[in-house]
Length: 253
Ligand code: ATP
Image (cartoon, rainbow, N blue to C red; front, side):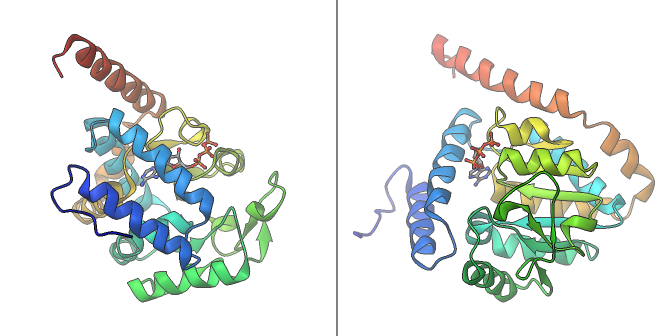
């Protein structure tokens, strides 16, 4: 591939795309993951390619909920490992109770091990899910495989870039489901107990930053979580996009 000129207005986006294509060649990202990334980029356009106030509010509440949880788990798929292994490791280091589990839609043992190895190299000490030991009820096929000490036992699951079926199945088990998905219309976002409608590599460091700040104020955690109503967060995203489009139609954006 010819080098991407730095002067290109979408240099960063092109760089990420090229990197994801390489990660597909290395067996980390599934071909379908490239399509999912494109869908995310489209919604990021609509959201202005920055963290909105309602995303920041959800990220703060996510930090509080993770701090309150007895058994929180972060679920990692191929795109998440490719884009944010370092951010996953940093979040896990900031929240010692947080377990990290590989969970794949398109699972092969080799792919699961490659992703786990990438996470370990980035600094994740204990990676679950390479040899899953249990199944999540209501999910046929490979997507239902989980670790009995990880997602199966979790009270809170942070699921970035999830597919709707699994997010719904997790929510049905009574777990508190925090999603990170740029698409405010997805079934994932609509199933979430706490939807973070933001880009993954913006969201994870912000959750970490908030967790480090909130650690010193345990008395505030419950109220912060209760203050982040999922319907209101989704509603803010719809309003934000609608308003942006209205401004663009008027030529004032
Ligand atoms: P549904 O949740 O409705 O079932 P889906 O399963 O079809 O949707 P996928 O395309 O499988 O959704 O999931 C990927 C989701 O992840 C997309 O909705 C996309 O918006 C989102 N996404 C992709 N890349 C990123 C990213 N870097 N940061 C945040 N979200 C992203």
